[in-house]
Amino acid sequence: MTSGAFSPVQKNPDLLLVDTDSLLQLLIAGEMRLLRFLKKRFRIQPAVVEAVEAEVRKSKKFRAQFTKELQKAIDNETVLVIDSRTIPAFVSRSPAAVFDAIQTNGLDYEQRGLDYGEAYTFAAGVALDVPVISNDMNAILTAQRRGIRLPRYLLRTYDLIVLSHQIGDLTAGDCDAIRQTLLQRNEFVPAAFERSSFVNGLGKFYPRLLDSSKQSIGSGVQLTEFDVCLTIAPHSGS
Image (cartoon, rainbow, N blue to C red; front, top):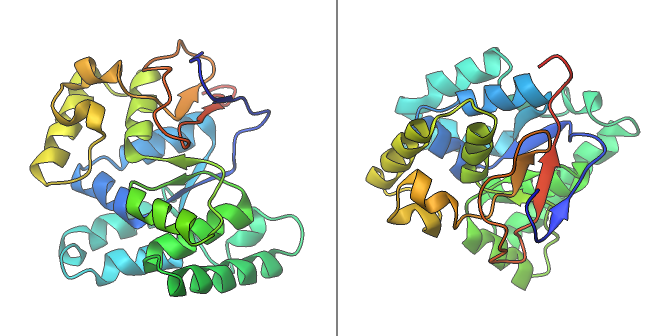
């Protein structure tokens, strides 16, 4: 596997929380299938908090374009909305108390400077101890400065793209098409890929999410303290 910080796990996380910016990137690129790959192969349920769902539905810029696609993903259970009804399936003890903690801490995080979706996503990531996908480094640094606790694993949309390539569900051409779409829409792309094709940039990108059963890809050189590689195992029979 990659050198550098490496976090083997005995059990895959039950959930992967997706922040608003990352969810919109997947919708913009037309790549919600990456979340389906994750669920099918690794039995990890992609999820959003209610605040993220609300941000997409109420966005003047995106609601007309993506509300139907988001609803489709929710209806077919590609994406789960974390609320008082769904959380008991993932919390064995006192689910109501855990949900209340997410609401309380989410409000606190928002009042301390995080955007609505980020505040509740980070609060849920901490309370449930599950990975969070968020591209918003400004929000992460703001949280650090203000003493806001962050989830253990902070991933980026591109970690999901690279994982999908590692397991063979996306070709290099597929990944480069996503890269070009995001760049054309002025969306965040990691520095390694801003001026390089996917193939040329991959060697400079530290992946934070990898399949433990496959040969490692990407760089083993950490660039930030958040470069910790979480390895996950395919579900038997996948």
